Length: 245
Image (cartoon, rainbow, N blue to C red):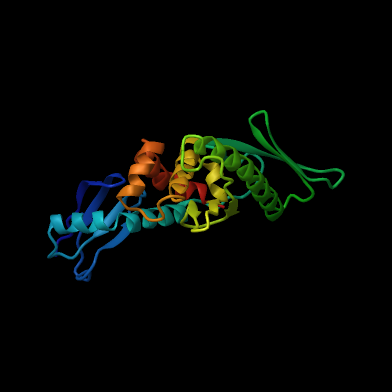
């Protein structure tokens, strides 16, 4: 059987999906996904499936496709080394680390002069990683608290109600709202641009009224953030970079 590959584009709820379609004799029952050498999506489909059926399956499984791409692309990235000069994200911008050894044993970290300056008691990567992650957590708490208040000002259903916040490192989820009104945010989200952070906040604030993702939820979200779809597409495309540790 001659291997044929076709470059295709498909409109999905999260934007245009570009992929290479191919077939293999052993794939007879379901779609398989993989990355090519350039990091592009390759869809391996049963030979008897029509293009319409393949596209319909991809659209129905958009979340699964996005999760696969995020995890696969993250695995392709070189692990962080936590050394001077290495670039790290904060609110959509990349900053180099400036690592120095403390003469007194006192640890300190600041974003100053376009650099994340870390004064540490040990130059091992684990020490610097722990110190940087603690800094991210402190920054996330301040940024998210401030932005929740800002976005909530445009959400009349929130009024002056206090909104309890919690931070967690999560692999797949950027935000979560419980039935009791507790909102959890992924600490890694603080690496995203401000408009993406606000978009996740708007999403979770809407869950204070609508706990599911039905039509009423999206009508509410459209009012609070008309650009939610573009923001979600960007987060799904870039999120794997924010999760790199």
